[in-house]
Image 1 (cartoon, helix red, strand yellow):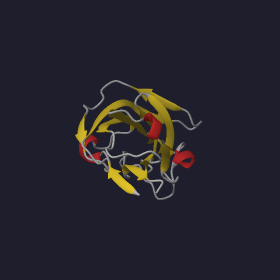
Image 2 (image 1 turned 90 degrees about the horizontal axis):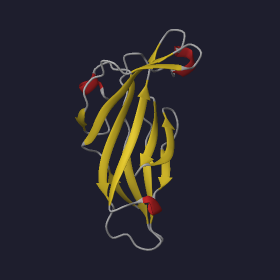
Image 3 (image 1 turned 120 degrees about the vertical axis):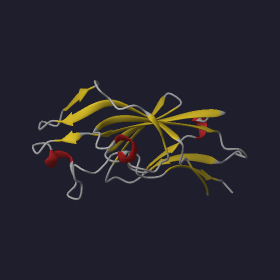
Image 4 (image 1 turned 180 degrees about the vertical axis):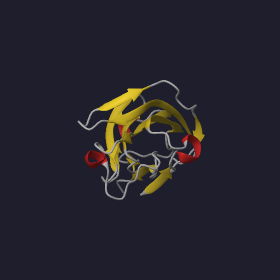
Length: 160
């Protein structure tokens, strides 16, 4: 197996402030968002966004791995973000990944282009005392930052 880590730089863009309500629904507000920028992954977003709570789009472009042979399988592996995320490759939805779950693995062999766009939208909402039991593991505090805190990588499995 061969690994290609997609560490960075990644573009990030805050999309909405999010507040998790006691009924499990979320309230989003798009005014007064912080500016976007670039960061290396894995990282939490506190260095760039401080205590921001909400939805942030992370985008990374990468080229198709070279030397692929018939029978090779290319997996996109996304370790859980803080707190959950939606994964897209080249405008196609792959799935979701959440804190406390195993890394998500997607077979992207047939989806790869010469140049690829990977988007992971991470949601780390502000919680209220009423909503906290619905969403927070015991070790998570409101001060914890969100973001792509785990590795994102391609794994290439060869048939031989």
